[in-house]
Image (cartoon, rainbow, N blue to C red; front, side, top):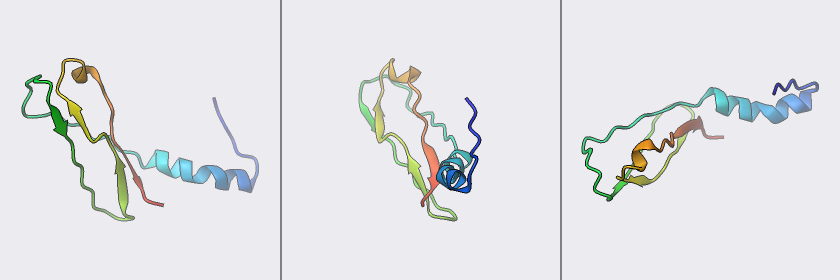
Length: 80
């Protein structure tokens, strides 16, 4: 589905969304301990950079066979 804004107010409404989409980044993680011991593993992510970047990610995961197939990438976008 394509969307083309026709007026300036429409452009202004979608500009924050466009900025966020253009500034997304995927960070992959592979644990050193590959044991599927059903324990909870906390995930912490720290960021520094221009524009006070923020991250959205899971707080952690349970090390199970099902968790190996689950993908939930963090998204990084500048703070508004």
